Length: 277
Image 1 (cartoon, helix red, strand yellow):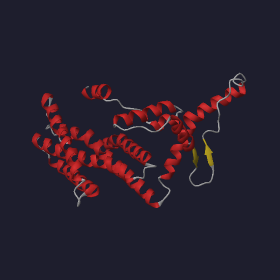
Image 2: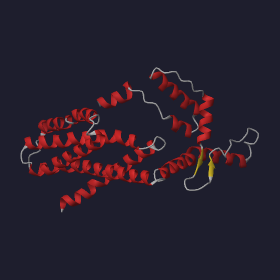
Image 3: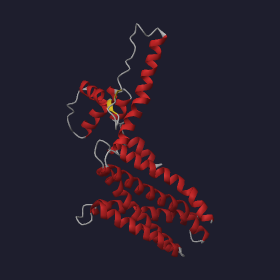
Image 4: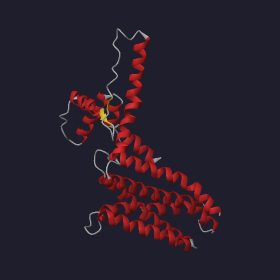
């Protein structure tokens, strides 16, 4: 409830200007750009006309792997005099569909293909997906089945004590993210070795969980696992945005999170079969 109140009443999140431009809402996109500039105490020298011109230029996209150019402004809205006949009405409907659906899909398709336009980018994309898949897989299985396993051992606590244990365990994630911000600045660790170290310690915590036979051990190893997991994820999310070029950064981050969350949704179904076996 507290997070809900903070999200909707204390923070004012703006829609993405790029999304608004794709939907033909240029004036709203311009207002968002002005809002961001004002928030950062900067002067916005961009005019609405310049933003619209840049939008029109960006909508002329080249399909990857061919010389075909697709112009998203091929459809013009019908004039007032022609709006009465059925042919221009159909033309206007096609324009709306193209602007709201087809154009964004073509932009996404081109951005997706750009992730594989070179060996380096293709390797980076696939490797990042594998990292997210395994990360979300482990996170979902640990969250779903560790409490069940502990309950079977009759050491998971009950009532107020159960929720007290959860508060202690998940509180470990707060200092972990703060420590992560400092670890990445250490020269001999950096982002890569900080993630390697935190993931190894997270895996070690899960392996040692097999030996849990008391409530204290449950709290210690569960808290340790969540500590290193939070540390790893804090670095991973920042590293993903840094690893990809700016022209595909949003697509890369979004797709990586998507494949991870899909895996996280499937993991408990497979985990249930393994647990029963």
